[in-house]
Length: 112
Length: 116
Image (cartoon, rainbow over all chains, first blue to last red; front, top):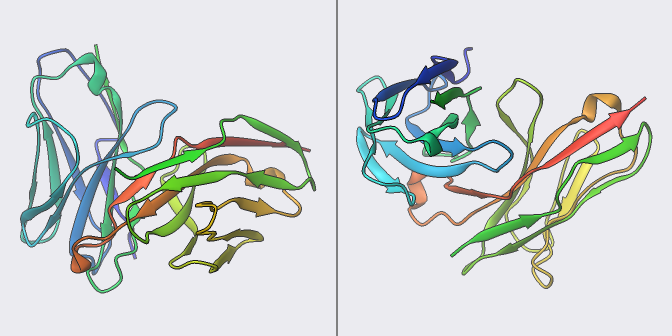
């Protein structure tokens, strides 16, 4: 049983560019959450998707947007990249019945 | 808003030593509390959890007790191994929308290095 998978694992972008990160949830899970983990810090909640809609959102600007597809996979999009967007982006999936989160290994974004 | 404060690392120990990582929290309601572990090159893994006051979570020799009176959830292990070297995160969840799953607020993490 595959766990949460994310792609790409590493990527480098320049300021002003746009990036899309992808996440496939653990089998049987219907909810996907995204977190940003800056170097040396704890993860911060970006948003959560359930039934293809954004259910909850953290304190992140509109440059951060997402999408959930009918197969429950999800994308995180960041526009107009800033140097401060450099971080490890973690995807976590869960099922509404339990709520326990399972995390992927993350996508490490470097903005130059 | 909710917040979690945990002791800064790195914490360096010898094998078989006793480990304590302090964690305190601020929350408006009655949160669930968690400890996650992040091994090098891996994603976060749930280590243990407690959902109400005085509950004790335990796993792999680690324990933590939910102390409402001191708003704390300190992680302890009696005898650490080299394989316990990792970053440990304390977190809380106040699930506003019951069916939506945990939205976690994390502490800054504590790096633990166990030497043989």
